[in-house]
Image 1 (cartoon, rainbow, N blue to C red):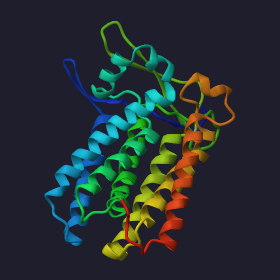
Image 2: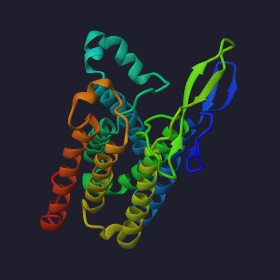
Image 3: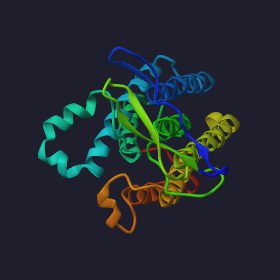
Image 4: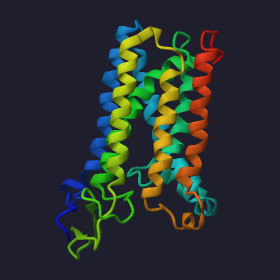
Length: 283
């Protein structure tokens, strides 16, 4: 160990009562939704939308995020195992704890859910609601990646930079307690890179909305979110360990491949915003 690395010794379990465990990841994941609800409440009040719709929107977002992220994980990373026993995986998909969440799957789930939500709320067209929801999604991304940091997961590659983190390997003792053993080298804190990027993105999106509010160009915030979030995700993947062994044989890993269409979609949304954004929305 050198003096230029940071030992990361945080226990992912905050407290344990019998078989129940309160984990940092779950607490941070829930915090993202709770703060997101308060932000959307502020948005709805300032733009004259019915606050009663927020309960529906919150429910839609929770279900879409969890199911989309879980399905995406199995579809993109464990597809062969999923095909062998789809029934078991479908049950596991909706049953806590949610081990394995794919952000690209969450994106597909959220977009699909918001299209359906917008169709039943005529005063909230898809691009209007998506522009405002991505503000909260960016903040949730910060909390989720901080949860990954607390879990010592989605780690970066080996590094000797001054801010490199020495993470822990986990095992269970005979009495059922979690045992943490420091790795023999330090790594890029890739989770922290993504968390801080999401936090800055949240600040930018909220600033733009707060400046223009109801006059925010339709699609502006959604386009910025997609390009920023998944463009940086593509870059950060070069500093991260692959999640699955099959990715080691690929020129680009799965996270990078899936980020490309998300960035292209963001570019397309911004082109629409600045060329056709004044037309009436179809969706």
